[in-house]
Length: 452
Image (cartoon, rainbow, N blue to C red; front, side):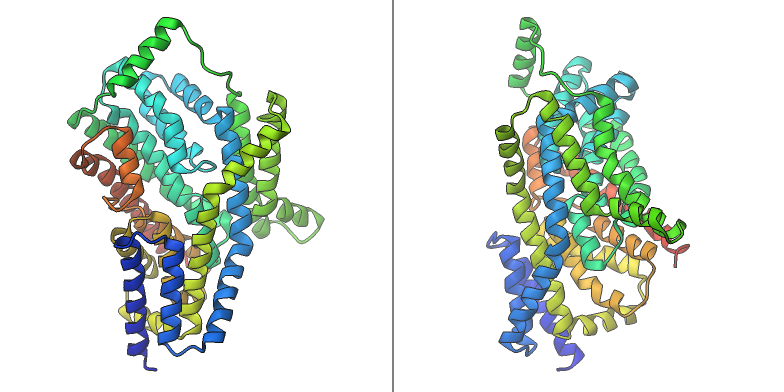
């Protein structure tokens, strides 16, 4: 089949994928599988071989993803249940002071969203926003946008959150490099979209705290009710940062250390599997056993954590199937040649593809996985360094962040928790997400000219 025919079939398959997700609200996992099967059959793949490709694509992707996302979910649930996220927020706001509370909340969101899913982290931390808004009589957006910016940046840019992990797996990116460039691009994006934009939009749109929340706060104050005993700030920072530091040691050690037993040890404990196992066990001990959590309670807690992780793992695996079918059917090579002939820099191309999928179907994670599958064939045609692959991966994350609107579940979560109109949600949340994506992209695009 000609290259033009293959590309037309690929476009048809992608159109079917987007239609199934948008119009029938079909689960992205099933939609990805159906689109993959259609592309395989229409390009002439033998049905038996197509099924083998599906199995290889799913298994090859999940061999890494399932362990990392599963461990990350368990670690995040233990942190959530112990009150670790609240401790981090309370301490940082106290240290920064009320005048610089926006910066404290941005940093809190950035750290907390690394182990905890964005929607869970927001539900946990929003009472702190309510309390600050009631005390200062400022718009809820004044404090909410910085927190949301920190959460959104970590959710999209920093492993071991599902989206970055999936992109790293599909593109073969070392997690250490992805973390490094995720932080380099994420910090300025969080600053501009968080405290700076938050101050502006908080003065433009006044969002009041819901009346029932005000009444609850007054009741607690009148009854002098105390919250639960929270873990120490230092312990929470240690537990969250330990796996990230170990993974970064693995990356830098592989470059700087000479061959020998010390390098082998650093490489072993810095592998994402081992680093997350260590962090999860430490959190179970320090935030569980030492705080009186029983074995049955811990079992229930970790089991609950794997429920939301399960669908993320399956969607990511289906993304691996999508990529494998594109490659084996010949569509990948045809698209790779077309993209290469376009003359666009790879970092820009990755951003544009991811942005298109994001706007069309809404989910940032699905946009990342789909874009990674589409861009991977052209990467296979070139020899790129790990730093360059990491920049492309972060560019995909940037494109998957911009222009969140009514087809994104995050849009409605913020809309409901902040009790805003759709118009105000577009002016605040959507603009904030777009700023994050654009600032992050400009950072990685600039860096791409210095890294080969």
